[in-house]
Structure formats: C-alpha cells, structure tokens
Amino acid sequence: MATLNRTALINRMHKVLKKHYKPVPIPERSALEHALYACCLENAHYEPADKAYLAVSTTFFDWNEVRVSTVKELAEVMHMLPEPAAAAGNLKRVLQSIFEASYSFDIEALKKMPLGQAQQKLEKHPGVTPFTVAYVTQAALGGHSIPLDRGLLEVFAVLGLVTPQEKAARNVPGLERAIPKNKGVEFGSLAHQLGADLVHSPYSPNLHKTLLEIAPECKDRLPKRGAKPAKTEVAHHATDKKEKPAAEATKPGKAASSAEESKSKATPPADEGKAGKGKPPGPAKKPAAKKDEPTAKPAEKAAHKTPPAKPVVAKPSGVKKSAAAGLSKRKPR
Image (cartoon, rainbow, N blue to C red; front, side):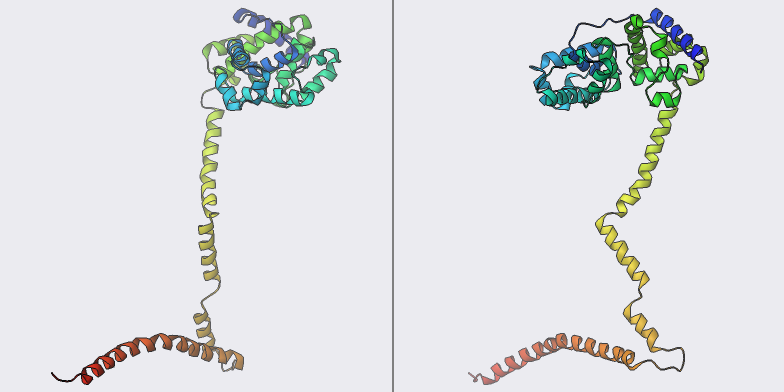
C-alpha cells in the first residue's frame, strides 16, 4: 500500500471513530500506576479496566501485598477483564521486577531520561508488553506513541493498513506521522475501543458496519464464524488422536511386552534350532562340539525331572509299611 493511501485511510478511520466512540482522557497518575493500569487495559474496554485497577488497588493493603499475592488471587479480583489471568500475571511480574531493581515501587526517574533510553529501560522489566511501553510513553513520558494491542492490530489487518509481516512485528508504518502528537491521545483511545470491540465480539454486526464504513473493500477480511478457529480446533483434535497410540506404546508394561514379542519373533526357540541342526541337508558331518550339545542337554533335563519323582513314590510306600509294621507288633486281646 502506498504511503498516501495509508495516510488517507488512517485519517478516514479517525473521522469515522469520532462518530461512534467518545475519546477517553488520560488521568493523572504516577509512571508506575500508568504501567500497572496498562496491564489492565490491554485488550479490554476502559470501563472494566478501571474497575479492575480500582479493585486491585483497594482490595490489597499496598503494592507490596499485590506483589506477593498469587496470580490466581489477583485474577479473581480482576475477573471483569476478558483475560484476567494474563493481566494479573503481567501486573505481578511488573511489580516484582521493579521492586527487585530498586527495592521500591518508584519509576519516576524515567521521566528525567531521554525518551529512547527510558523506553529501553522500561522494556527490560518482565511483564512489560509493547502495549505497556507505548501507553507509558504517551501518558507519563510525554512521547508520541499509539498503544497497539492484539485487538487494534487485528483491526488494522482487517482494514488493510498492515501486512501479515507488519502485524507480526507489531509495526504500523506511518501511523505516528498520519496522526499528529496533539491528537495522539484522542486517536489512541478511539482506536483502542474499536480493537476492544473486536476482541469482545468479533462477529458483531455493528462492528462490521463500522469497519466497512472506514474501508468498504475490507468485506472479505471481516471476521467470519467457523473460519480459522474451527480449523485450528480440528487440527488439535487430529494431533491428539495421532499422539495417543504413541503415548500408550511408551508405557513400561507395553514396551516390555512388545520388546519380548519382537525378540521371540526374531530369534527362534532353542529346540527348533537344534531340531533343524539334527537333520542336516547333506551327507556332510557336523563338528563334534555341536553333536555333544543335544546329548548333554537331554541328560540334564532327565536329571532335573527325576528328583521330584522319587519323593512322590517313596512317601506313599513308606506310609503303608509303617502302618503294617505297627499292626503286626500288636498282641491279640
């Protein structure tokens, strides 16, 4: 797409969004609070994000208690978000990494650094996503950056503003040039609401109507029911079915039995091999060592069989003789 067409489409998008959404101003917060709020706002509407942030900041005693709480506990408090576990995990990691870096919950020093240096330092903290960096840049550091989350990137892809490669790289070329800095907060909040609508209800007729109003040629790229999600689900089920026999075969019992069966098939029994050797195909004689083996082994088998036979025969005969001897010694009354 040419730069002029992309810029014109972004400006048209801004005009259409003004008719359907209201801009949301950025409240006064510290740099840390903006970073934590961004964890709640990513892929969510402003109203549930405000409720989640308020619930976290008031339910727990302080940020240190939030830091030592489990992700499950935080997710229960932030249940109004579309992805509470992901938001809770990012928020906890941000607090943990900032505390480990300075043993405090203060990143106001970023405001005194050059913008690029401050962004790089913020990116190093685990849990800080590109959306969080862009939001803190816009809200606390005074820079010009449009926060892009998964929903807004998908909107740009549907409108044809980004290629698949640019979407994967989370890069929208010419976005900051098309939207001036004095309108960055307004456009960012309006576009974020459109992206949150796509995450919340991608098949909504009102959402499709708004997207078609921005770019009528995007009809074929609109989210459709049962398209890609259905294919991925089927693919997962197919792989599960294929992997089940392999998993069962790796069990110790079945592996041993299969190994024994393969050995029995590969090596014939000893008797069968000896029987074959006892019947030579031609007049050629076999070595003496091989002739002695079959004669020695039957003798050993006979030696093993005779001992259990002797006590079985001896016990009944011994019992009868002893009884008869006792009767013969008794005197008649």
